Image 1 (cartoon, helix red, strand yellow):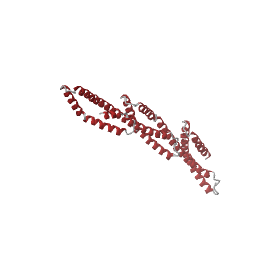
Image 2: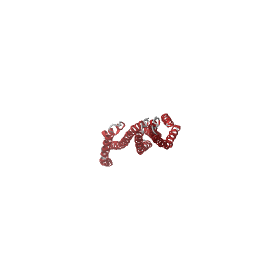
Image 3: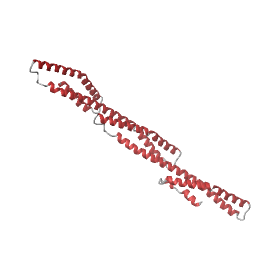
Image 4: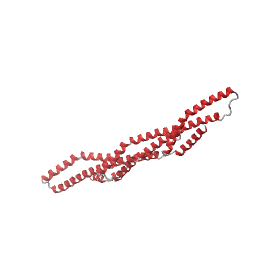
Length: 287
């Protein structure tokens, strides 16, 4: 019994190393205690019989019996307390591991959200938007686990678990960081949409600039025809060209309007928009 008491008094639950093994070992010892309950009861019964029969050594028997009863009660009490502490320590250890895993995950998500990569063209931005949508879905999918560990830490603190203060504070920091993802997630989503809008507009504007650029050599041609027929043919072609320019005018005006709207809204690429608008306007005026 003394050796069992010594084990029950051992504070090995404080060291998180091999807690699962320690708990299993102690639960096996608890099972052994239960198995010995009848043996102790028999010893008590035999002792009381000897005392009640006025055995010549009854006082000595009484003293030894009291020691057995006292030691047994102490062993059961200390063993039960250690079981409780080992279980609490193991639960706290598991909670710490989950908190650490979530913290590492948060580090990665926050790093991804801090990037200033908004793409270099329409295709690359579309890929970034898809990637960001997946990130937001991942963040939302992590919510139940975050809520679970935060609630678990609160319950353990409420139940007065040993040394749970650090894990509880850790869980509060985790919750704060997780809740803090909402704003940067939305900001990046908005920035990527602005970037997509910009590159789509750039594609449209460049298409018009290229089209206008192709017209310049034809408009600057010094060929006016060497005969009446040739001149009439050139005049007809010029009329068709003028119609094409007139039909493109509303398209170009709309492209310019969209550009000015983005610029006036404080778009992050306002300087680039202004340059393209300047080129498009000059090219159209020249034509």
